[in-house]
Length: 216
Ligand code: BG6
Ligand code: MG
Image (tube, rainbow, N blue to C red):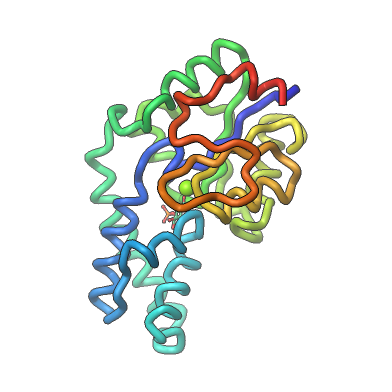
């Protein structure tokens, strides 16, 4: 019997991946690295700094910038990303998310967010669902990012349950790997690329039966 739900944010609650892509592509253009849609897949679920490191390595520029310069580049990317986020409204929740959260709250099943994004509280506020989460893991407190399970273990702690008592929802392979590494039940939310190791997959949350999930 499961006792709580743990959600990734980008690609599960809302489709912010397109805004991350625009901001990284524009930053890449400034420093001479081509960030295309296929390469962008490798940035899903990965922290801001790790994403920048991957972009620099992709362009063979891993030794071209000091830490200070990299921090400035990451800040530039985030400024553009946050500007793009200003237009978010509750209409930007992915299909079935609002209904799923409402149903969980009605059933008394607590929900938490396990996202690498430092913008998560702001995004949830814009989407009008922040109050529906009992906890949001602060990614600044993490020692390791996904695929390490630390973020999912912390999210379960916020809900006062064990990892194996939770159901985790993820759209990125790094996230599915993190969920499974702490023996959590994994729901893979598909958006094109296959997800390996998920216990169940769907294209949107409307396809899921909550009572069946709670019995896993
Ligand atoms: C993850 C996204 O949720 O958050 C990544 O999938 C992103 O693409 C990461 O890099 C960090 O987000 P932010 O908002 O802190 O730059
Ligand atoms: Mg995601």
